[in-house]
Image: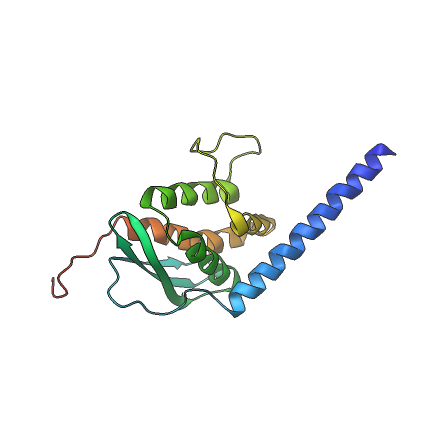
Length: 168
Ligand code: ZN
């Protein structure tokens, strides 16, 4: 009987988790945060998820080592759009190192690692709303939709733009 109760508890949690997940995707898809072009980005990169057709253009404005502004444009499915929107919120004001750690944890969460596996960094990280995107694991084909923006972020961080606007 005790088992039955705890099963029910788990079910309720899953149900609740799924509702938060669905609300979050819907909210960020309908009203993506930080969506639009950026004037004078310091870093940028494009990402394409061929399996779904998601396309993202990511722009960053960094001041020394800190992300001052993140914006994205592009077109994609609900999950890729919501994931990018959530990512831009999470990255605001983060240092490059913090952003990279966040990216690693997010990838571990989605592509992870068996539960209980050591994350690839030892520093504890609060993923905030991002943790709910792990709901996408129910649909393995959509995991790439959710991770696209993070791959694009890593590409952007490694691709500083020249200050000069007329470099060939
Ligand atoms: Zn997609």
